[in-house]
Image 1 (tube, helix red, strand yellow):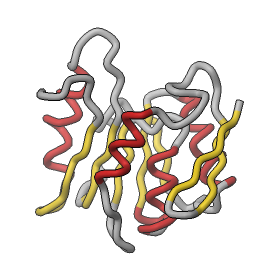
Image 2 (tube, helix red, strand yellow; image 1 turned 90 degrees about the vertical axis):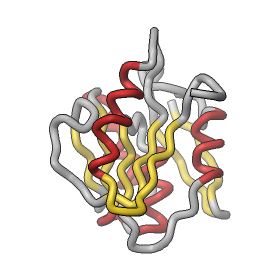
Image 3 (cartoon, one colour; image 1 turned 45 degrees about the horizontal axis):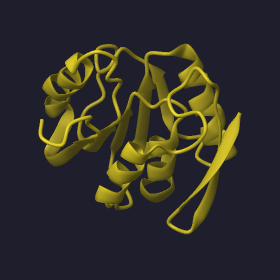
Image 4 (tube, helix red, strand yellow; image 1 turned 30 degrees about the horizontal axis):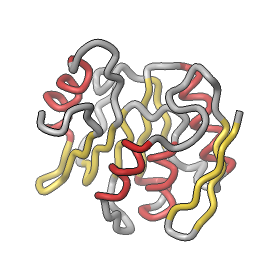
Length: 151
């Protein structure tokens, strides 16, 4: 499966599988999240729970691939994200298999972006928030898709 999107007047294409979130295209939550951020060259970005890599790859085109870390617990997501990074000209991103923030020590991010899984409750999102704030540099921001307007 594959889909294409346009971001900042550039065309991007993504390989995916039915097992990954939103395999037919960019979901509304991620689209809304991306609409709230304004990346600057050189900023450090963490795409937490990267799926097929959309958020990290789009960020990498602006901030530079060397400034982006993408993580996911799923081995297929990690493999597909790396393939998509190469396909979209940002092969220098770092893609790690990680259970949230547990398995790596990367810090000093300007942005942490996530559309976490909300299968039954908010436990994954809460964990990302609790562990993520100390991975941000002073003045850094965490932006997350939620299922509730007020949470």
